[in-house]
Image (cartoon, rainbow, N blue to C red; front, side, top):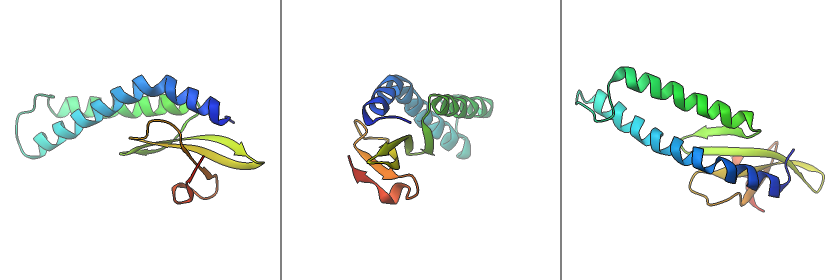
Length: 116
């Protein structure tokens, strides 16, 4: 369980790795598009795509090992379990947001997001 402050600190510690993952994800998308179109890619070949996919998913697993719940890959969604007024919640961060500014009840998911 995380307090909001602890969840924000954990996200801040992950940010350099998140930023790197997002850049590699974009490179992989370009590589996959080039391969599908039969073009040479500055990002490599099919074997490189397979290695990058494995690396990206290993990184997502390492995020989970920190206590984050990885809920999405594109966009990247991370939840941290917590409690608010005695109710189980997930402190929710979505790619593009500067910080954790949302939460939702653990039983409601993304559609139940509310501002903190």
